[in-house]
Image (cartoon, rainbow, N blue to C red; front, side, top):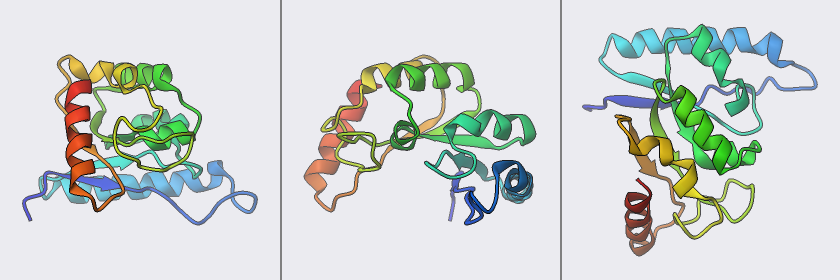
Length: 163
């Protein structure tokens, strides 16, 4: 297919209260390592995405970075659901940008996973995406839940303005 990157949702249905992160994380991280090696053999980069409310949220990603070689897909909406504001997102991207290879940009009106058109919500992308304007070499996609191509086009224009 010619894909160079693949986004990985390293999730599980094993969640509290029955399962705790310390019990589940080693298995998730082992799966990430296996998939990362499999992908690398095919010249594809695995980018593990931060997902809200599951093991290995954005707040747990240093463990992913420490225990695997996988890259990251940083999802702005998911980070926001897990409590990050624009300044915290910028700090995360500035501090770990060498491991963040892909960014999903999506907007929301509140701390919810809405994926409204970029710029129509309340996330301060000017601040959050500032670290990507330097010499960062990853990829970015606008994630907008709509079938209206006008909203997609507007989202792309807004995103270009932030970068």
